[in-house]
Image 1 (cartoon, rainbow, N blue to C red):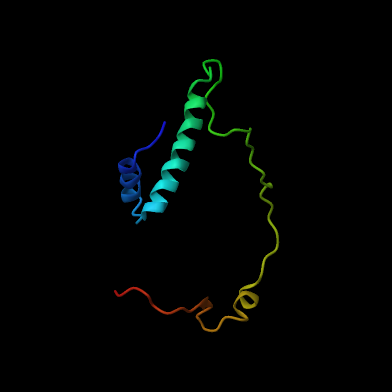
Image 2 (cartoon, rainbow, N blue to C red):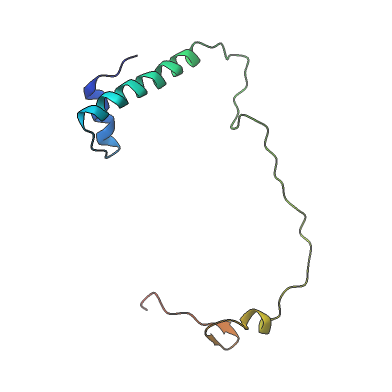
Amino acid sequence: MRLSREQVLHIAELARLALDEQETELFAEQLSTILDYFEMLNRLDTKDVPPTAYAVDMQNVTRPDVVCPSLSREQALANAPRQKDGFFQVKRILES
């Protein structure tokens, strides 16, 4: 399926791209080739293929939650540039 110059310019406008004449021809050729591949995929018989969200089976790789010792408040605040009342003190970014 060959895209016309106008179709490529419309796609470029939607993508907010400014194309010169050479780029318009290049993208017309490249996008047409991509659409040809989709046409080949459309001809495949997929009625017995169940729909999936991923091409391969996915599984979560997580570890179990385990309680571990962590830093004390003093250790966590040891290198803080500013602290107040046992907390990190940062600049206000929102007006009240």
